Image (cartoon, rainbow, N blue to C red; front, side, top):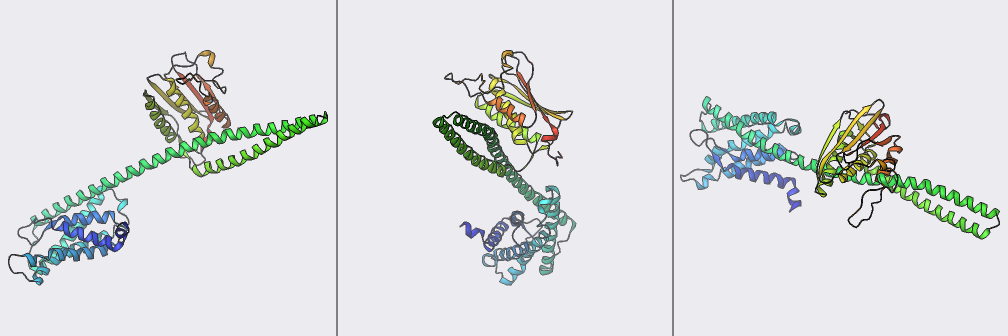
Length: 430
């Protein structure tokens, strides 16, 4: 069925059939029944707006034929004798309406999306009026009826404008709805990409750090082997050499893993991002995080500067880690503020909260690996690598991180200073 509907000819026939049926729901705006207006025109316009990949003129001709055939059946059902020729003469003008309408709309087909609804409605109203004028003119010629009176034209203009703007309004509403859905999907995809990206960045960062440690251990093991050999401790020397060789294998495996992660990281993240966009994702993610803990937290952002950066993944990791820590530090309700400003040659990120604060005795050790004040319901301590991870990333960007002075119980403020020149994209123009 889907393949059947994808066929161009079947799509055109479906448009023509639906329009012809819609045209049977009609009103007679003038005295007598020589001119009628039905839902066919609105249906036809609606299809043309959404089916711009189809040839408009071909649609107009086939729809005109269908319309004449449908309306021409009156010679079979008319209460008084009516010849087929008379019926055709009475209805052929209706078919001309669709041909003229399609011909005029074809001029707009490739640029419809460029017009705002108000202007598009005006253009379509003009096309509708021209098409109705062509139909009326042909009826005058075929039926010998004069309908060119001012009050009739005024009524015709009002009806065409109302009808055109109604369809354009409906079309615009549907398009806006589709755009919102696409935007939501794009934003969701971006969140997923950033989540993967930050995870990959963290894993890559620590794997690179581990590579240095592995290299140092390999070198020390080989030095130990050399010393043991000089001391005629051959058996122990061989064990040290074996350890060095095994560590070397671990190093090669780690290099392969690092290469794979780096390739995946590079393929996932190929764009830059503004600081405002980055903070938007941080706030959105942590709003969900706070709701998970059933906490009522107000998030505020204050950007005194904004530019695009290619280092948004490490920046996102830094700020997101600090904000998520702030969420955990707040008991039931509170406020978390994020401020970004430039000071001399540095960009400063400030994350503050109204949580439980940090003890003075802990300030000198909070960035050490393993330090934590978080315990689960079973009393098991957390890993305590969050702030040390943040500090390592900050240092890798050539920056500094510090905790602001505040009394215990009055909240915490973290201040990150990074070189603007280092993190700002060369083509930044926010």
